[in-house]
Length: 326
Image (cartoon, rainbow, N blue to C red; front, side, top):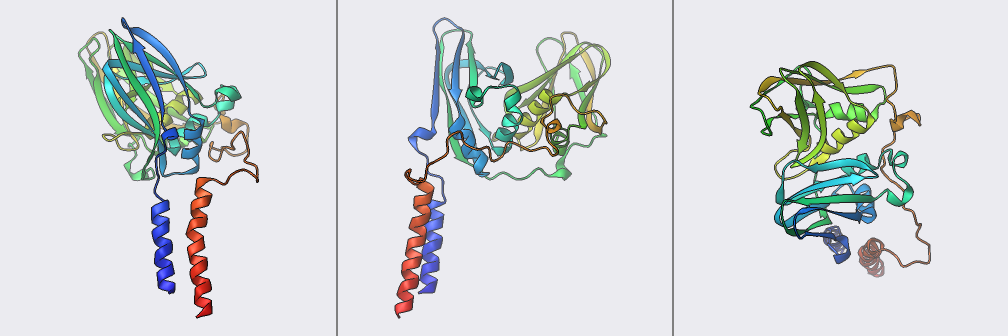
């Protein structure tokens, strides 16, 4: 009988432990342009962000379906989060707990309470186009960052641009270097570029561009501030089918033909990074476990999860009591 109760409990956990999509879990943002140009929309993702924050096996899934190729940009409280690196008709991208926690860390300094979970979207088409950008939830199994896979700070990436809009692309896994600068206000992530002409260096992953650095001919060290470091962490934690968790693409462009190198490393400094949230507290705290704005009252209806847990426990209690009478 005890063996039977154990099997019953396991079967219930397996059944009820699987994510079941609900219609209200999907938020669809429709867009349409008659003669080309851009159109603006907004979306609120509080439910999705809280769900992902409290469950490391869940992610926000962003899917695009468009009639024609479209360029998309996402802004938050007047700051650009990302934009598509090229026009496209469809894509599927995942934002896990690491991504959401990075987005919400320090958000109180740039957003008011009403806009914390609001994302402003810009759609741009060359001609008439229409489509939908949807946000839903998906189950994932993500591995932790592996320090052994991190980019070697002593290594160098080489570029050779032919001029114009055609980029020269190199890839590397940035790994724990981003974490060090993101979590500690006394560390910096530096990118050193040595190039033979003026250049623009874009940081991309999964078809999304998060950051651009510009420089002139010669050697330049780009030291990232808080907002730039935050964007790099968002990029590193973006997921899609073709890119591993911490693989990043570097796209070098120059109007004139050129060549050169890129290297990056982090260093410790005495001066705290301006606007870094870690300056306000003794220890850097990520936005994990952010409390909801509205507390649930005791007399409110129990959640679906609480109901499922009770359903799983009741059969075991019944079996145990039956066993006592034998």
